[in-house]
Image (cartoon, one colour):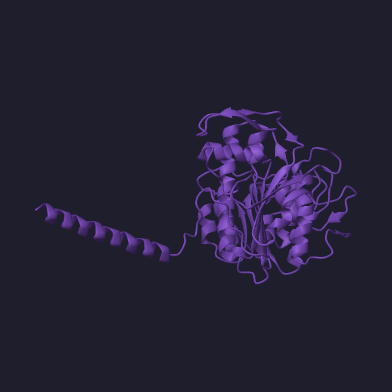
Length: 395
């Protein structure tokens, strides 16, 4: 009896080991997961010819803003999608006339390769017009898009496709945007596109730029549902009268980024897309950590969209950076799970700290190290064969 039990047990062990071996072989034969583990660095594709560029700008985003988002959402051992990008560097970001840059001068440098004075939108201090990398690429047949959670006429998006001496000239910026030919523009700012007779208008004339945009071939959409129905062509999305407010009818930043990529990817020559997480800056101006974290995580979800597209496409360069740091944020203490954080702020304004730059995709190593912020579009111009750049246009 004892012998029979042992013989039966041996058979069970043998069958079990065989089954495990079969399962192991089957597992080895399965394709590897498309998504890396949550903390793994995204593996870079080879340095092939670049076809597309997605530039993410976290307005006011410094290292501590990213750290706060990571800790609050994932704890000390987690990683945001931004953290998992394989290339990192730093950008120096003073303005032409001030050690501390504003968004206009900072974005002008990122867009044109020139320093300018605070408040100026892609004009040099002498009012000479600076050609932007978006404009230069459109001249070569690229499609282009601008996405923001501020008004689409706000300083950062404006610097890529408009030219005015003062960032507060949003009605004039709106008029330039509808004539720019930029295929996709998504954000807030409807008030700057409607005539003054409308009670919500922030214009002082009778121009109806929404009608003008339609005449120029744009589909104008004002909520998430309308945006999702668009599958081709030019689109102007204006989802609130001023800034976006996380209201139910609004698309998220990630949804806007995804739709922009969907609409732009069909261009045979490639595309340039700028996506701004505008309100990281606003939370930092008010020293509100929860506001910063919320906007930081929404921005990271949009970055995820860009990275997933780039991993599939293998010809897309993704960059994540900031125009400046806001608030002088520091993480002074807290718990490892991130539920308790002690934040310190040195300012309610911008600071002179260098800002991070992260890269993924072909030739992203060009952005490692410490650079002036003007180098970003200059390197992009070199990679895409745009010359001469930077350059001015006298008109």
